Length: 584
View 1 (cartoon, rainbow, N blue to C red):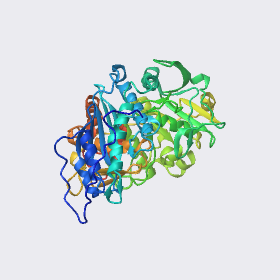
View 2 (spheres, one colour; view 1 turned 180 degrees about the vertical axis):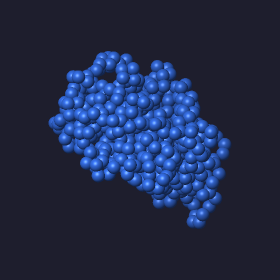
View 3 (cartoon, rainbow, N blue to C red; view 1 turned 120 degrees about the horizontal axis):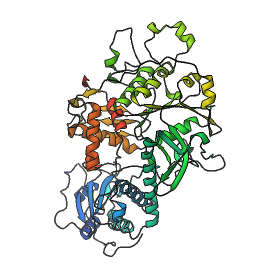
View 4 (cartoon, rainbow, N blue to C red; view 1 turned 30 degrees about the horizontal axis):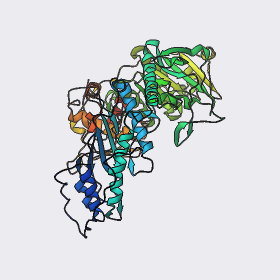
């Protein structure tokens, strides 16, 4: 890191220690609050009771940037303190921030650079994994400003302040980091190439619809990941680069890469088949992640799926609140109205039916389905089972009877991994077979095996109007209560929402962001008791487009990521207190 004159170490006397017992929270430091004063105060605090750190809260003027101590941890073992750096002018050229896509990419590049520069420091910044997402931790403003959010374990000796170590972090490391993130100091060619890559990915995704495609997988793409716990690309002799079948190969001209070729996945019904361990699920997993942009070098930069694609699976035990599952479930023995279906404990089949109907309600026109994670009895019923259990005794309409009318009548395409049943050949428009990770177009061979089928009817599910009073983020004490546990649970108010089956959450920050989006839906008046759920999501999308990620929670002192509307809807639908006021 480069040095910065005027921000070196400043010595000071050792402050008195704190005694035992609980003490009132100290008042914030008054008077001049600049970098020199911060250095002096930290030096004087050395050896004092850990609670004295709370007097640092607020803004500190470092000249060309402001350091804000947003939250101070109660003791050395509590979650890290939260800091913010706001630099109005980091020298970022207009070409890097006037376009929203380049602005997002530039922010991501600078955030990852900050993480590398801080290696070995107590300061930590959230930069996520292989996806380029809108994060609260690093933002470039539409005016070129740089806004960074950090976590810091404030140093201590037991429950006593280590003022000298804190002074090094706040008064040396922070200003050196700001210097090193100046546009004149960074590798500008690398930053521009990084943004170019993201711009190309976005352009490729936007080209899909005009070409009648739901997805594209570039020739040479690296689909397999390093391991079950690493999302980095597989390397070495075992890695097989993707190569499109000639019959499905398309070419697309991109702004920076020029012409690229790869497999276009057409609209309609596409089956991915093949033997076990030949790469079917790996391909579908790449398509699931194709709704997001990826960092250069990931191998999936040019694997893209339409932005509204939703992964569907069975989810036994989830709650379902007044969902119209009528297309899939009819004539229940209980006499319940399946067009207004509610349960506290859904079966595999009813949960999958609800997931499909909810995805369509939220605006998805592309469904991604893996046979391995579905309810068999909702996917298919063979002839012998139909002979034994007649249609008037079976309330379920299998997906195979609805997948074609779902596309024909509502424009909803499906990409389906299927390894155990050839009956889906009857309804498929295209069949791609994976053989030792190499894709082959076997559509004609599959058609020769297909049989005539009689379609059912897919009536579009009724729209729902949510009671906003049932979406409450307040805890028992009346304050907002929102936190996550790993990638499993979102705590929203008094509810724990199980999100393990929402497979397109790729970053823990998205789960927090979805909780903040639920809060914004209510507090922003988008979910107002008269709009349908889809209309409320549309309204929130417009507000986010206008105000950006800060709309979700500048008052939130943790890291979060802007989620898609589809994951916001998924969390809302799994909120157990949720109440639907009416259907339309």
